Image (cartoon, rainbow, N blue to C red; front, side, top):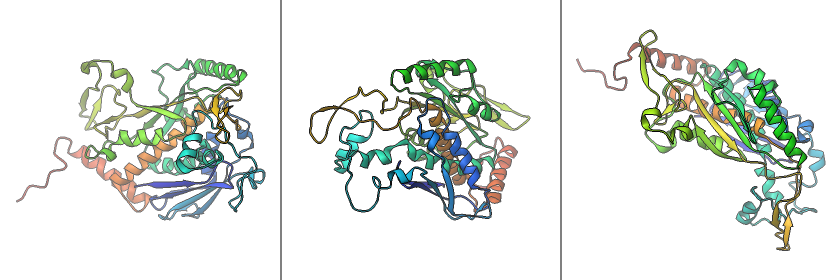
Length: 398
């Protein structure tokens, strides 16, 4: 299994992520991680901070001469703006000269203040900020590299911003990723992309924010990841939890779940057929998102993540209460984006890759990348050699 833990605050000295469970021999460089972090900064509608952030990466441990050692990998992402925040975010004893007491509706501010007994919303917002996702993307870059060793490629694209939508029939392939990233809103459809940019411009002019949806597709996922035997082993449940944990994501749809919920069963499921040429069982459609009973089917795994509009607005209109005076107030403003849906898609890619990497390691095991790849090959070879036998049955006695 793969595990990771992030630490750090939005305006702190830096973020740190520790990834445990990677096999030895995986090629890793700081430049590879930085390239993924640069993708997270993409997207029309991002705020000024994206022009200041540089995401300086240091590999602190677990990598030697460009390859993992099988020990935990530790990555630091330095905050290039730290000198501006050194006093406000100092870990030394003291108090803030500018406490934030007008919590934003839709953010973790007030609930966090109540839960932990804080009088300053900054004690909550610094960790609740989506800046934390930079550490997730760093971890995800390692997961993507690992699953690529067994032929899995994870791609995301934006399918909605505000009222602008992409035709559901459009389905990008891994080779389309560079073209998607070149789009100002990471949208595969140029016409829809123009409409999304117009939506963002209109919201920016009004000092407002926009939500939307991103779709994540995992190509090359083998049959057998996840399990039906426990609630916390189901692949769709693991993916939904991982993606739902992204800041401002409020819904996750696996496959065509919403559409098929209004259909009859005869029109909702993926018919199965057998291909004698390859020895594989295949589906004629992919409405289930490549997962049945919590187990990957060997088809395309895909899901959609819905992000709400950001809680910080450039126009001060959201009503709140000042927690110090208990008087009505307008919520405070931090530097913000008009929309972060394009970036959310990149973060969702990372979360999907981390889940798939963890489940692939659970399924195939291996202390080295070579052993991991060999085990996966042996599993698929055995499956194709005996397509109609009970592979879980005990051998017959003589």
